[in-house]
Length: 131
Image (tube, rainbow, N blue to C red):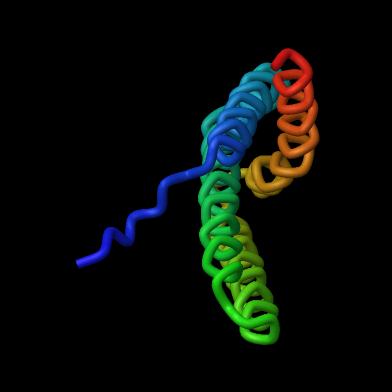
């Protein structure tokens, strides 16, 4: 039986670490600023966790798509993107309905991927320059 567990790439590991660190920073800053600390903490934590899951899902989808024909790969990646988007919308909607979890906190956690990707790129370039 083949091993179906996905081994994360070094880039994914770096990206996930940066997302986690930025999530901690967002959590700390928000805890200083906001009045409802539990709501903010839950929101940022859920958003950050969801970002970590989504980048892992993205790498798995891209790795699988590489072995497919072009049209099948395009459809697979598109379906994967749609599923990640739906997952985000459902989580934000559930948090909004419960009113127990800070929706801005969740959204902030979800938006950590973009700056994390930029920071990870800078880190990777510096590591390559040292080599």
